[in-house]
Image 1 (cartoon, rainbow, N blue to C red):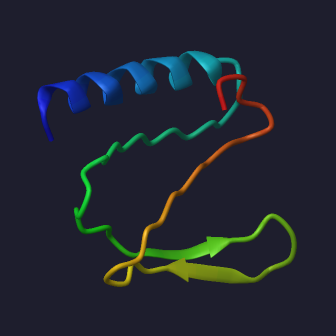
Image 2: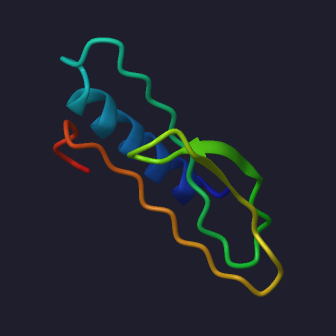
Length: 77
């Protein structure tokens, strides 16, 4: 990760932590990757908004995946 990526990650981390500072039991984890062709790790057992089902996100060669995470209580989201 280059210096500009580290700066973006830290800026995002500070903004999100400020936004959730009043939320009880908020857990925040920030990771930034914006390199074309970089390998994406496996995201396992992600729950859906409704129901008890889960899913796994696995990157396949040639596939483009854009993940956008948000929360109703997060103003910057």
